[in-house]
Image (cartoon, rainbow, N blue to C red; front, top):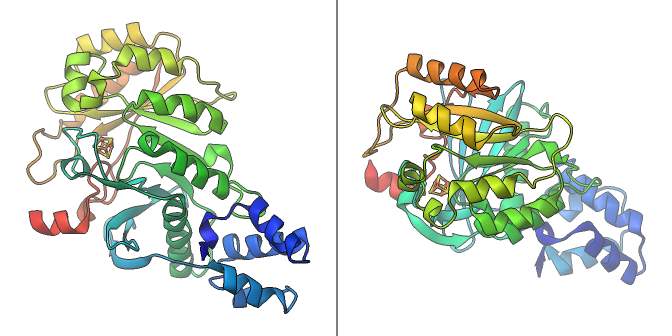
Length: 350
Ligand code: SF4
């Protein structure tokens, strides 16, 4: 049986028409499942009686098991641990931001990129997620926060910034995005979605076909030797090549590229870094997101003083870039960027 959550609307329409029903029936199903959180065909209202058994014989609602919920007492961040059908686990973080939640979705179980500052990178890659596993993280996390706040929650934005390198699993990620964007379903706009990459160049070419989705790059240093130490992937795809490719991205009016910059004590926020950044990115529409490094158990780097992060921010603004300091949320449940890990590893390290 096919998962309902790997079914684009066009396929559902063809299926119901083939069996003597109409396009509108397919659209009703899609709207009620995605927009109104119906969790079984029986909960869907307004369909012909004969359509219900047909749907049940052909499609399943194979929801993921929510194995664990952690809620930050500091800032209302919620971390959900999902158990996949093969027993693997993956995490989704719900981050409160301007009166609604943003969902930080995972695209892989673990990650093969081995960034030196990242907790997830210590695990290696177990496998990539299927499109339905990405969609279900969104649907179930959204349902979870809706139930928690008595239904009053706008559709959350998405950032692909959880476990995994989304461009390394771009086909499944692209398919999940296209389903979540269908108007009769979740109807997410391109600007509600941000894909964040360590710089996997082959995936950027495919990303260009996805429309005006927001793009974020883990930048972290303008120098190849330093960046390669932080992100080993940089050895294969050096920063100059990435920048050249990014110059070819079509952006909408007032759309910016986001460059994540992990500020690490005594490492990557000096005057020479500012000079090189100015030289490399001259004229590009970039917003720098400065993230003071979040120490985790066994981390090789230190958190910088806030004054030096402020100084770096001012330096970037003097170069003509936008820059802001991101306050890391969910520190008390280890849900800040680069700290997602499978439950097994977390337990092993504690
Ligand atoms: S920072 Fe992202 S790309 Fe790098 S190891 Fe962690 S999850 Fe993978």
